[in-house]
Image 1 (tube, rainbow, N blue to C red):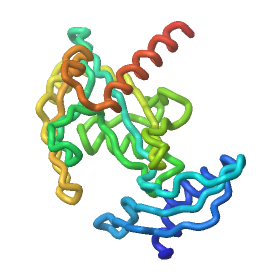
Image 2: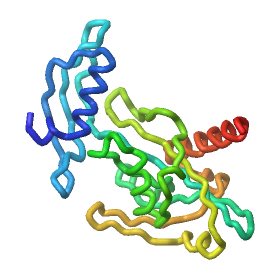
Image 3: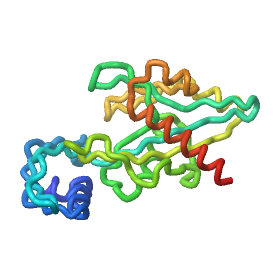
Image 4: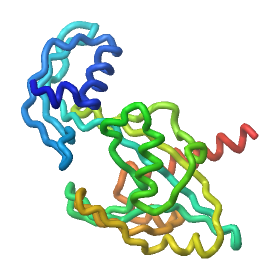
Length: 222
């Protein structure tokens, strides 16, 4: 196994999670390792021998992706009281379609600070800057997207941001480009009803649910 993979934060995080779950890791064989442009590990396909505490062996193939974060921002227009969710549209290689999503990004090396990564991704993808205290976790732990074959777990955050009319209107149609990641993002403001009409992103649909649940729980506690 290469030093780059062995020292990668996402690999160490996966190993730690497996051991903390009571499993024994007997060996790992990298089948493919894909680096980022800066040399960090982006993805890896591993063949691993993992023994659960009950005995036997777990399925051996793992797609090492690492954790991610998603931000569900609701913007409120101080002048009109209008509220819209701040979302992004971009084309995705998984299906070739234009996808409507919430701002998101991979945690990568910053495993222990998903909130900080979420703030950074929100600003990069939409231009909206918020303080750490403005982001509230929508669940107290990350949610696994497909643990049968991947280690990816997603941290969900939400925020409600009030702003004046000019700033509020300025988000619609913004273009954000990141050449190194081959990203071209269009920012948009949507109501939940507008967004969910034909919405194919499972993560975005879950984001709406978690945000609404968080807000309802928060209001009941007040």
